[in-house]
Image 1 (cartoon, rainbow, N blue to C red):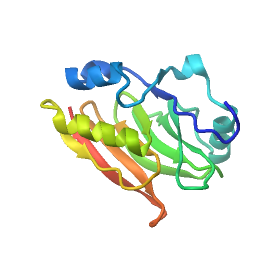
Image 2 (image 1 turned 90 degrees about the vertical axis):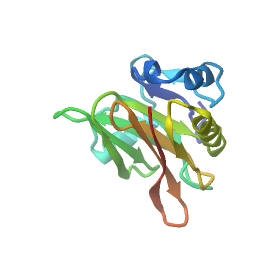
Image 3 (image 1 turned 135 degrees about the vertical axis):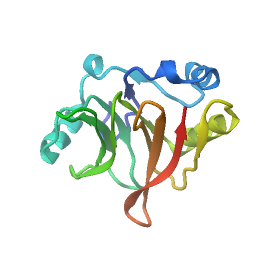
Amino acid sequence: MPPGSLDRRRSRAGSRARLPAVMARALALGAVGLVVVSVAAQGVPAELTRLISRAGLRQPVAWCGAEFGAGARPGFAVAVLSEAGGGRYLVLDADGRATVLASFTHNVDLTCYSRAEAEELATALSQSVAIHGSITPRWDTTVVCGFIDDTSAACWQYSPVDRAFTNVGQWVT
């Protein structure tokens, strides 16, 4: 991957079976632009390893590349396990600053979407009879989504105006 390019790879563990047919079909067809990657098989990029070390975090079990603003260097969203069980979703900016988005209780399911991909996901969610909720991306920054428990997902997006991450959606399967 060339320096400065955004890595749109995605890692998740065991949640595809929970998706209703409409979402599984959309994922299989690539309608929301996802690529499934195993962290163990793919490894962690050197830049992410550097940022994790700088932030003093444990090795992530899932990660995806993210952009947090025009002209900003790419960062990462990560899922890090807790010794007590579950774990946390965090974002790491290009300087290694970590921002906690949420805790998760069981399985890791982390995805980064461009605004266009998140808008496609919003359409799929609105058409689903089995999934209840919505997502409304507001800026041209990466939308980070993760399941916080076995059936509930939440999405966050960096607001360049507020210089903070804000919740832009949630759904229940």
